[in-house]
Length: 330
Ligand SMILES: Cc1ncc(COP(=O)(O)O)c(C=O)c1O
Image 1 (cartoon, rainbow, N blue to C red):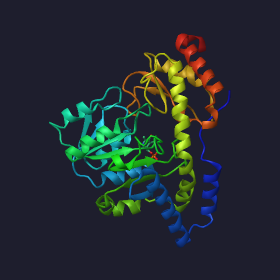
Image 2 (tube, rainbow, N blue to C red; image 1 turned 120 degrees about the vertical axis):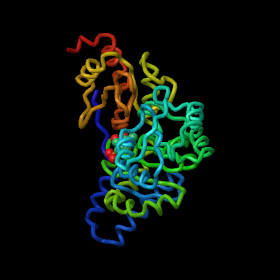
Image 3 (tube, protein in one colour; image 1 turned 90 degrees about the vertical axis):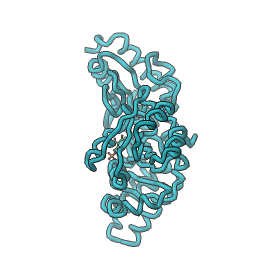
Image 4 (cartoon, rainbow, N blue to C red; image 1 turned 180 degrees about the horizontal axis):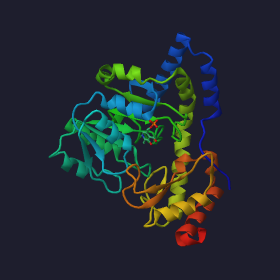
């Protein structure tokens, strides 16, 4: 079995090469920028969009418009939320979750005593499991809280539960590697609220991406829905084969397996599941995934061409074997 780390598509790489030959041409640069913004607006259903240098740049731009405290999940978020809030001197409030998933009733309860200005979350908690974004949005709307959805793992959701501007005040995403819009660099921010882009106009300009990124994004965004669908399907298949998997019945783009010796299991998995050009194993506890010990198989890191049934069966077999006999691989 050969496993490959995700690479930007040939079309995106070609578009970026061609655009690099036009650097300095203002008219063409503006065209690349506008076309990329249009493609983001189309996929998020938001009215305003900007392509920025990275996902963290998009989070920085979003937070630059805020003065009040920032609510984030107690696990399964993105560590940048906390770091960037600290950078701006904003207070951070944690909302308890059930293994990363925000429970609407817990959120409602918490909002009786806390009044954050915003709630930052990732569409898939820890990439493992989808958040009930629509329900969370309703509660945020009722309480005057800005919901910022980091959709790095969910752009192009065919169910339109995630990364959908109808129920997120602001969407931010990384288009770096390995992501669902897998461009190798860049990010974006989108919203329906013109005030946010007005207030952030200077930082949006400061953190803007190059026209080369914009040209690549236009091509890579076309691949996002299939990229996401195939990754979710592969995880669904694997979740049925691994007994101890977390969130067995929910959509996700990686596989989390709690285990009390993550170092040992992680090492064994890394030495068996080799990925050309990168890796696919992360170990926990880790804020960006789950707070308990375990390993994550980052299926989202793999080229979707590798996610064939034969390979998935082989991966499931390897995992079962290692979980049963972790010491055989020393
Ligand atoms: C969920 C999530 N958000 C944001 C980022 C930051 O993106 P960037 O590296 O483009 O700044 C990452 C990076 O891995 C991420 O996983």
